Image (cartoon, rainbow, N blue to C red; front, side, top):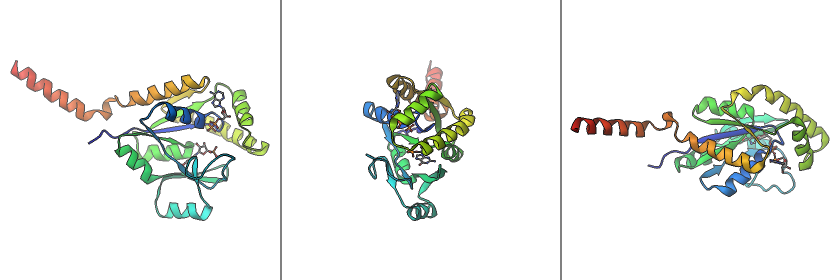
Length: 210
Ligand code: ADP
Ligand code: 5GP
């Protein structure tokens, strides 16, 4: 059987560059699967149903909750967001490293259910750069940007809950560091018990034969 993939959560302030980093990571390496979330927020210009998100009505989303189709869900600045279960499980079984780009509350719920999940927090180098990126993206009005900045200030209090911090200053550097971080996770002792038992037994037999 193929080794199960690593489940990774990437969170970070809105405008930190998560989506940009994910796109670059997917374009550069082929061992990753990015989970597509369901949401009740309206699509932004250029977003497609089934590509960035599965866009749902509140009724449809609540039906998914009732039917236990989501690993987790949360309310973020007035909209539901949730992670469909089936895709994540099947990709992990295929040996893909699965990335969930989700916010803090969802991250905590997944870590509780699946403790070997790797939690990564992406931040821009400064708050000024964060605001510049949010404004520069040009997808939200001023009130929404301010709500997201207030939310960022709340979220900043929880960064220690994550396993790793990643600074998205230069994009290419950030993407390479993210890749290295996830790949080194495969070599954690707790993920290699079968290999350890094999080599232990092998050394034992070999040493007894000497
Ligand atoms: P998030 O998904 O975290 O909300 P986005 O990926 O939409 O953030 O990025 C927000 C804006 O910042 C976008 O306009 C994007 O092009 C820009 N951006 C992302 N990463 C960088 C970076 N390393 N340097 C400069 N601008 C960036
Ligand atoms: P946006 O509206 O900018 O696409 O996303 C807003 C926030 O929702 C981001 O912090 C994003 O990571 C988070 N998010 C996206 N999908 C999910 C999900 O399935 N579950 C949770 N809990 N958060 C999500």
